[in-house]
Structures are given as C-alpha cells and as structure tokens.
Amino acid sequence: MPRFFVESLGEDIVLLAGETGRHIAGSLRCRPGDPLELCDGRGTDADAVIREIAGDTVTAEIRERRPCRSELPCRVTLYQALPKGDKLELIVQKAVELGAAAIVPVLTSRCISRPDSKGMAKKRERLMKIAYEAAGQSGRGILPEVRPLIPFREALAEMAGSPCPILFYEKARRPLGEALAERPREIAVLIGAEGGFSPQEAAEAKEAGLWLCTMGPRILRCETAPLYALSAIGYVYENSAR
Image (cartoon, rainbow, N blue to C red):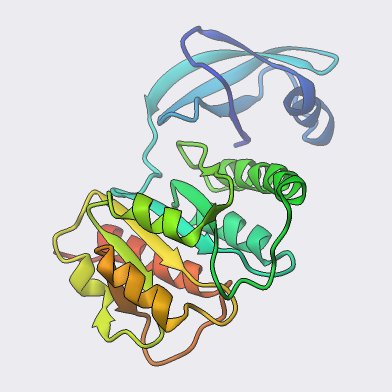
C-alpha cells in the first residue's frame, strides 16, 4: 500500500497536493477508491481511501488511526564524520531505514571532505530529501532529521548529555554489548570518516564520558560501520532476549 507523510491527521479529510499529489495520481496511477497509508511523522499512522483526484490534488478520507509500530524501542542519533564523495547519501538512506532518529554530520581531523557553508547547505537539502524518501519506503513513523554539520568537539559536548554515548574506535576493546546491557532508551553513536579517529580525538571522547567500543576484529569502511552499528542495536532491542 502506498505510504505518504502528511502534516496532520487531526481531520478525517486530508488533501495531498504538489509533488505528493502528482506522484499518487501520475506515477502510481491511483484512482478514487484506492487505499493509502498516511503518517503524521510524529508516530501516528492512518489507513485512508482516495475520494477524489483533481489535477495534482488528491482528497483522501481517513478510516482508522493507530500508533506506528515500526520505530526502534530506543532513540538512536547517528553522529557521522563527514566522508568524501556521495557516501553520506548512502549512509543517510540506510540509517533511516535501520531506525536512526537523527543524523548529524561531524567534521573531524581526518575528514577529507571539507565543504564551505554554502556547499554543505546544498548537500543537506539533498540529504533531507533522501531521508524523507527512505522514511516513507521503510514505513517509519517519524521523519528523521539531517542536522547541519558541526565540529568534533561540539559533537562530544552534545553526546555527553546522552545516557549512552558511544564512539566506535578501531583500537578499542570494549564490546558494544556492554554499553547496551542496561537497554538505555536513548543512544548517541559517533562513527569516523576515512581514516577513523586520531588518538587525540579518542582520548578527548573518553574524557568527555563516551564509551569507546569495538566493532570486532575487522576494519570496516566508513559507509559500512554505521550500518553495522545500527543493525547491531536493532538486533539487541528487537530480536534478542534480555
């Protein structure tokens, strides 16, 4: 069933216009009487049926509302050191599919890509569109935010307020399972770019109170590591007995 985000599910009649309406009427070739699944981006889903299509405006009637069941039991914020090229697009897409609540690009000492503010603003616009599409495709109940780029130390300061802040470091020895043993309701994860983190950055993270954890004996690419971390967290919370 096609799924779309709307601003509100407060009324029984919902209008879907613009790009969304064109997609429903044109690309999907939907007709009056066809079902739709709607989400308000704040955790509520609704079953609806198309009542009318006029140009690029689709009128739908809500039949039933229910809490979304596709969100992780914990809120995970992914702090991702900025990789080169278009790798961040893949990371954002897959991180949203795997349940990340927010993605925060971070500038570290080993980041090769260092865009100016104008270039990063344009990149963020593209990333937010990717996040929107991935959230719809994967049945998410919220719209994960792609936040502006922040420096490493600002990321540490933010993460220090999390009940479970984790930096994955290739020289760490502590397994992820230790950090998740108490099943924290919020988790902040920091992943390096190409080249990982410098020893000084790892020391600063530890000083700030972050867990330094390992992903095992293999060295993962920067676009693979966040997907490994989110998959492991999802497994612990959704598929394993405590």
